Amino acid sequence: MASMTHCSGIKRRLTRQVAIGPVKVGGGAPISVQSMIKARPEDRRETARQIRDLEAVGCDIVRIAVPNMDAVRTLAAVRKKARIPLEADIHFSPQLALASIAAGADAIRLNPGNMSDQVRIAEICRRCRARRIPIRVGMNSGSAVPRKGGVPVKRARNADTAAMMVRQALAFCKMLENCGFHAIMMSLKAADVLSTVRAYRMAAERCDYPFHLGVTATGIPPDAVVKSALGIGSLLLAGIGDTIRVSLTAPPIDEIKVARSILRAVGVRVPGVEVLACPTCGRTEFDVAGVAREVENRLRGVKRPVRVAVMGCIVNGPGEAAECDVGVAGGKGESVLFKKGKVVKRLRPDAIVNTLVREVRILCGDD
Ligand code: SF4
Image 1 (cartoon, rainbow, N blue to C red):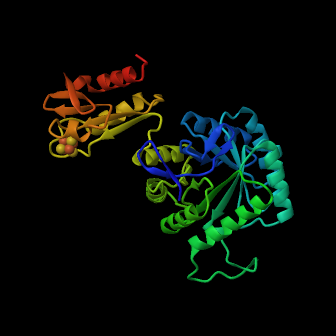
Image 2 (image 1 turned 135 degrees about the vertical axis):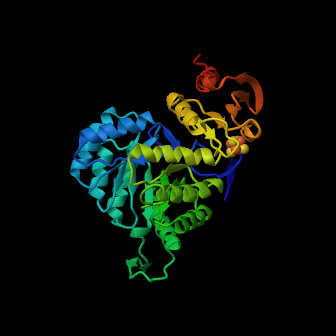
Image 3 (image 1 turned 135 degrees about the horizontal axis):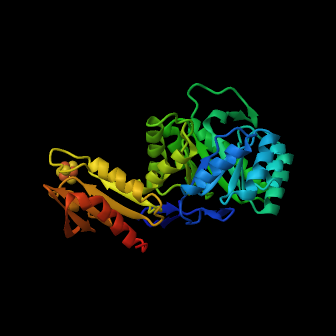
């Protein structure tokens, strides 16, 4: 697996690069975050509202399910105003893929598990190439079926889901390449973390397509967040992954918040303020949770990546949060302000929040 170094120090798998509108995926581009619209296909107003919400929280790419022609019309309507690229999610129907390309989709997701008509797929490739848009080969465990001589056969109870997904996805990629099409991304999502991670690791050894990471059908937070963090996070730590989607049974903007938290946790600097707070203990001298929440709320609009610490005591606080750009540690009736672990001044407890907010604004050049 060829590699290159990431800003967090992790060696990233070296992949080809594709472009979804203005967003580059793979080839060393920053790891992008994406989500999916959860409105009814015919509901243009709600679809447009969810896209605006996602733009506001820093989503890079939005996917829209296209199960019928109503959805194609919605896609065409929202494409005119959306500022971020839109990927059309297609199952079963080459016709809907072709219609979505014509409606202005910036990328197409095809499921190898339910599309096999080579003539129609060649036509999709031709149109995508003409419009310079990529195809994501989006394999899901649910649609992975074993084949013999190309014919689907009954799935054995002990079938290796990960191996099956990889085989089927790579065979589909080969079909696209035989059509002279190379602007390919790949995803290999299973409903369990282990199969997902195994599938991506196996595929990483066998191709250099950029990967869209995700674990599917994770369910409701907090379980869903843990599964996504484990699956996506462990792959990112291994240098695998170019764009990520956290699947939650929750509003789309929650998916972006979790995606950014996962990126931060693996050491990627992402836009916005990250507030670190100590877990509190018997040494805690002030309302750590309250201060952390207030600072986070007041700095919500900040775009630069900044790390802020709110620590409950002077004994351990500045040292434990030495990586943070700025922070406070509470003391008895008195607190200290520190920058990169060095105490720079003493504060009255009632000045903590205002001082932290002002210091971050100065760091960002807004004061
Ligand atoms: S920073 Fe201080 S108050 Fe917070 S958990 Fe650590 S020892 Fe306790």
